[in-house]
Image: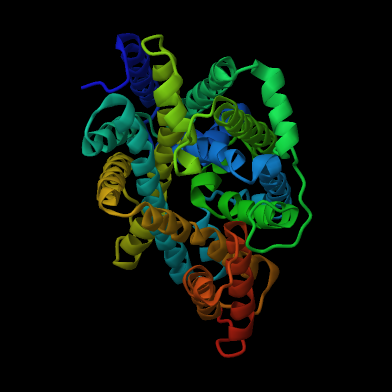
Length: 495
């Protein structure tokens, strides 16, 4: 059954999977209420939240594709993007984080309910649920491709094993299990990256000096690029401006991240975790971009032909050149699974939280059930919703096997539209008083239309816009259209 893994590698991999479930069992002993299951009793240490934020935003696609960026023409210029991420985090701490600590909120979308009304709350929640579960199902598929290559398991089994283990430890321990597992998984994939650096250097003729000379001669160590080219994702402007707005959307309005802030012991602790995570992400990007530069030196200096797709170069090197049956391949596979599972587990728990608080309980109240849902029943419902969303993501992952890789990448981009659209709606709610529920929905519809046009229509006219700008376009059009629509749909008082 095993394609590359030896017994020692299998032992390392199994130990990783068992430890994830064990953490879930340990955390589950303290999960007795809905608040404990979905928000960790709002008592998680800031450094645990820090680790969870970083691990959650790092998927297997990131670990595998970031080296492909620096292996290709981008080089270390891609490092401009996390600079924008840090700026976006500062803006969140200043403008958005205070909103989530006014009163006792359960989801990011409850801010929109208080400002616009329940329709916008439910619309935002449904956008989040569709985008999150589509995108993470596709990320599960991409991670399963590597799992299949290294283990020899069929793709369906690879998706199923990863999904089942993630569902199990998430259901057992809720957010507390997810957050602690995220911290362990962060250590594992960073350790895997560090090990990869030494293995690659050992395979390069001439070692570090030769790799350094190659990188300097080819310009791969260049970080800043101040050229104006909307089609290039690796310019300073795309990284800093586009990255800042993207981070504002993904970390400021996406409930998967907001859920972590709400689990903190207070606003100050949440702010500390969020700001520190920007530094950690920057260092993490530097590590995996460095791996891509070393891989470029390896292929150039050895003459070995690289794979056709740059984002496959790291996985291909692992398969071809990591020493078998030493535990190193098992460690790297565990690192890839850790990056995938941290994102998926966070997605499942956040999806259950949003479905409960943004959709289920409000609709239950509208239907005439004024009495609160008993705590035991609410907890059981949340766990079953977690399982349900897990099954959905596994189904998406298996279904993606029949799609072309270009279709998968486009679908991932579409799944990322929610960051810009939700950011635009949040800004309309926070920065204006004239925009009401109907105008906000019109703005979001206009933003979605603009993004679909940018991705699918403009390229046919020879106009290409790089993906870091998508959130800025979505947010900008949503705000502008929402503001203009307020003249037609004046704001009404929220019930």
